[in-house]
Length: 100
Figure (cartoon, rainbow, N blue to C red):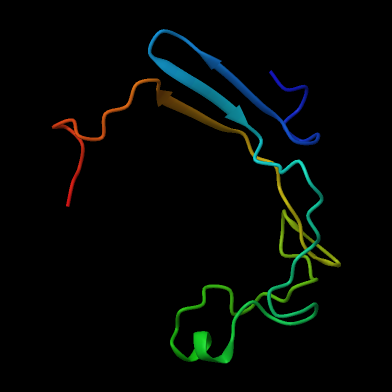
């Protein structure tokens, strides 16, 4: 597979008789800038979100050490290994599929 899930963009795909298997590190193959939704040194929630109690990050400040995926310049991409198993032949009309 990939040399490391933490080095660059990586996606490996294999198939067998019935399924396609994909392993990805979810790192895009293009540069991603650091990100602060409201600006460096500001929080992650608008006043309206705080008033409506819909923000889970009221105590975090962008650009501070908020754990993995943050640095002095904002939020950064964090690699993770994801695995997918997809049927080669799909039929969304099968009786065992959910429907509205």
